[in-house]
Length: 483
Image 1 (cartoon, rainbow, N blue to C red):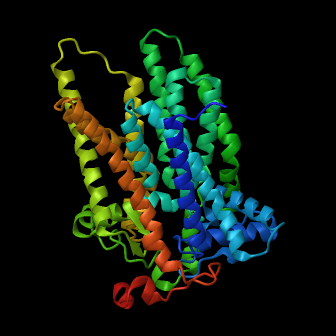
Image 2: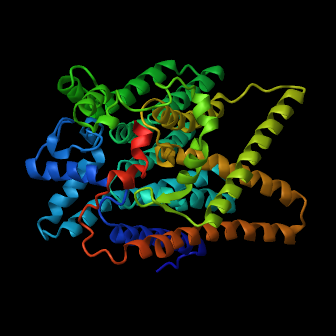
Image 3: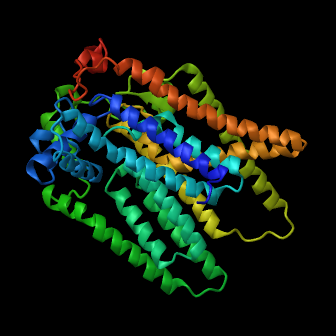
């Protein structure tokens, strides 16, 4: 039997560590201590009870305060969760056991996610240290890991985003073979049926696909027939796998294929008075600009902090040094990638013979930037025009491309420092890189053992939804805020 190498052992230990963290986290977490989990669980219960998908107007899944349901939005994760529960019902009727089984859809999505992240790291970074920094930045971010432990749509869309990026990278290498196009279309379909905030990856895919063929055409390759053939192949598969949802919405909601207008109408009828869309006190209907909201509130700080980690039902903060540590990493990564981009641009300007840019690589970076900007803009717009909720989880679809640039920026500074050091110093620098990875893994472990476990260890029945008063949800001065 062939012995496992050190690298293989490292991979196994990392997967095992993360899997144990997520499974334990999923086990100790009571129902609805993940944001909106109860609303997702109601959809699962409806599918199990009636054997069909709910409409958005279904009273059984209505959220009383807000007056709407998640039945208006894509529910592929809940469909799979219902399948897991249906299988579990053969063996048990225990409510929490079934909930835990449904949460395994999120956990398994996370394991697939890790696999694709590792594959992406090998394609995007040549240095093993950089590969691990990128991987751990993506996987061990507390808020991201939390997504893989309860019922939501974020876990599946993160998995889909990694699949999309990976198959785009493969397509750039194998000239978008038929196999790659099919797998890319499958990944896009999962994304479409999971979460609207991640639709920036559809634009990313179009940019990279078109950029690759444009680069080939500039090299004299007569490839536009192939471009249209494979483009329509991808489109056809996507329409076949995901188009049914929008056709269904068209007939259910009088032509509203996304269901968003129908959701607002439902909320207008059933929500508490001060939460009805027409009565919400938003910055938009008060006449303030978006810039005012950005720079005269704590929106940016709140989003960054909760992107790093606000656990439970958005109530439990990390330790201050965890925020400080991640803030330092983001500062290093952000400045590093900006300095690198500026340096490359200056070298290109000063070069005697300016080479035409590689449009495949240019389109990749444009696509990744789009995947970062779209969820953040939607997050910003939602707080401005609908309901002021500065939450980092709404920006989570950008996780993969954002962390790529952070890891690349960190690698830039490490490379600069490495050139100034002797060989012994470079080994010391690599040690620091691996030390940073260990630090992030320890932070994730402490989130479970020192933040989550003390809060939930004495909960007797974790299948019971904890209800909160209006004061607990919106503060003691909620009437002043509303009226």
